[in-house]
Amino acid sequence: MCSIYMLVVAIVLPCCFEILSLNCGTLMKETLRYLAGIVGPSGYGSKSTAEQVAHSCSYLVDSQRLTAIITGATSGIGAETARAVAKRGVRVVIPARDIKKAAELKERIRKDNPNAEVILCEIDLSSLASVKRFCNEFLALGLPLNILINNAGIFSQKLEFSEDKFEMTFATNYLGHYLLTEMLIEKMIETAEQTGIQGRIINLSSVIHSWVGRDCFHFNQMLHPINYNGTRAYAQSKLATILHAKEIAKQLKAKNANVTINAVHPGIVKTGIFRAHKGFITGKNLHILVIQVFVFSFSI
Ligand SMILES: NC(=O)c1ccc[n+]([C@@H]2O[C@H](COP(=O)([O-])OP(=O)(O)OC[C@H]3O[C@@H](n4cnc5c(N)ncnc54)[C@H](OP(=O)(O)O)[C@@H]3O)[C@@H](O)[C@H]2O)c1
Image 1: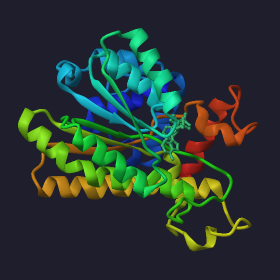
Image 2: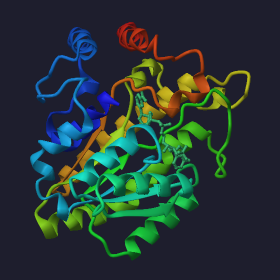
Image 3: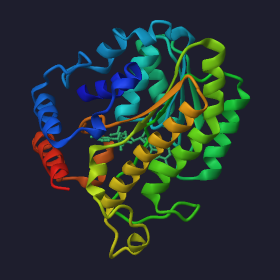
């Protein structure tokens, strides 16, 4: 789980996180750095752990006063991020579609840090009604909100539709998080005003966003199982999360709000997200995939 450090770095250094807009030459250098585990300007490399970053992070010094919502924390990158920040004393709210899995994570976090405050709630990010329910439930708790990590995601090869009749990958990775951010952003602005602590929103994107290319979004032609391309759907959803971050950043600036938003590529991590791609990604070819992803990005 080394490269989860990238996500924690995004919490720590929100203003200099521009990896998603690097030019080709820089991207190549960054890829080699990544593969070799060489430390970057942030002071961390792909061999750093989330815990190491969280430990040396000044933003988390007063972490007892921070509250974070982390979506998709029942596995992979989100689970490790939740564990690392909870260990620093951050109150972690975990909205999950599988409460049993979330309860197991809570137990693991509490084993690591018996004083950790972990709040579990239900959410299905592919359902707008469920996102609304969660937001109302969270807001009713009267808690502050400093950090929102829009991390949950799917990468499916099969065409499916959400209960709102949107293509499932777009609904889960983008639309659900869009609504979540809309409904919680005022709470984040208010918390930042009251505490003087900068609020931070982090959208999990992917370098694969650049596969969408110049011809941009295609929604309609994908809505047939024969034409469906899961990788394209995933790439589109990840491009949308970057555009979302750019737009919200503009709106926050216009409001003079003490809240930042950034989109981050977390590196290539072997997690549950690749479960539908068995044989495609294995421990052995993970490094090859990293090179392919970056090299492919250059040709777009
Ligand atoms: N792994 C990588 O190499 C990589 C690279 C680039 C970007 N990313 C991005 O990083 C983020 C985390 O991915 P990961 O690799 O940690 O994947 P993961 O292990 O599969 O975790 C995905 C998480 O999202 C949750 N989730 C999925 N659909 C949901 C829904 N409808 N409602 C609520 N929660 C839902 C899952 O919950 P369940 O436990 O219930 O399934 C799980 O907790 C994703 O946004 C992904 O696109 C990952």
